[in-house]
Image (cartoon, rainbow over the protein chains, first blue to last red):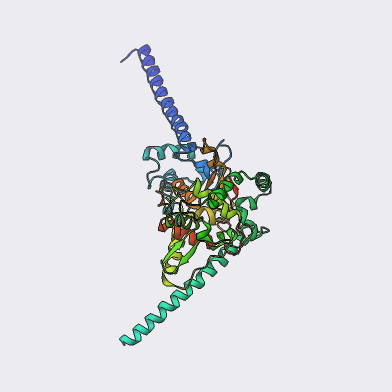
Length: 120
Length: 285
C-alpha cells in the first residue's frame, strides 16, 4: 500500500497533466479558428466577405447568405466542409466557387476555414 | 424513305436556323423583361449607365465626373490621329467615309463574305495595315483613343446589332452566347452568374452591373486603369481589354485580343443592348 502523501501527490500530478492537455486542446481549437479567419478574409484565399456577411468583417457582399448560427444550420460539421469544398455538388448553378475541387484552397486551409465558420 | 428523311432533315435545319435568328430578338426581349422584373421602377433605357442606373447616389457621383469627362483629352488625341494623314497621304476617312458620326453604330457586324464578326477596333487596324501602316498595339493607347473619338461622335445613336439569317452568323452568335453563359476559371463563374443572375447585388462594396447596357459606353474610361497608368493616367481601354480583365478575375486564362472568341462574345453581348443608346466613352470605377 502506498502512503497517503504519495497518493495525494500522484493525484495532483495527474490532475495537472490532464488540465494541461485539456487547455492545450482548447488553445489548439482557438488557434485553428484564428488561422481559419485569416484565410477566410484574405482576398486571395477564401475572400468569403466578397459574398457573405461574416463575423466582424466590414463591407461584406450580399450575394450569399450571412454566415451566422452555423452550428444550428449545419449540425453536421462535415456537411459545412463539403459545402466549402464544392458547393456545385448540391447546386450546379451556384455562384459559389468550388474552392477545394478547383484547388483554390488546400485541404488544410479548408479545414481551418470550416473551424472558423463553424464558430460563427 | 431516304428522300422523305432528307426533306425532313432540310426542313428541320431551315426551321432550326430560322428559329435561332428569331432567337436573337427573343433573347433580347427575354433579358430586358428579366431585368424589368428584377429592377422595378428602373427604365431599361437608363441601363446604358450600368450599375449607376440602379443607385441614385452612385448616379450623382457619376454625373459629377462626366461634367468634366476625364476621357476627353484622350478622345481629342484620337481625333488628331483620326485626321492625321498616313505616309501615303490618306486618312482614316478613306476607310470609314466622310461622316465620322456614322461609324460607331455599324459595329460589331457580321461580314457575310469573310464569314466573321468585324469589330470597330479590328477595322481601325485594318485601315492602318491596308494603307501600309503598322497596326496599333494592344487594347489601350492609340487604338482606344481613336475608338474613343469615334464613339464620342455617335453618342445618342441606337444600338442595333443584326444577326443575319445565315448559318455561320447564327453559329457565331450562338458561340458568343455560350461563352457568356458558360462557367469558367478556377472560380467557376460565368459572365451571366454576376451580370444576369446576381446583377444589382454587391461583391464587397461593388454593385454588379446588368448585362443590358454593358457595351454602350465602350471604349470605357476606368478609374482603376487611370490609377494603374502612373505615366499618362490614361484610363481608356477597349472592350476586349475588359473581357481579358473579367476572365482573369475568375482566374481563367484570357483569350486573344480581337480573336474569334471575344469577337463572337462582342457580337452576342452588344446585341443584348439593342434599342439602347450608344454613349461612349464613359466613366466607370
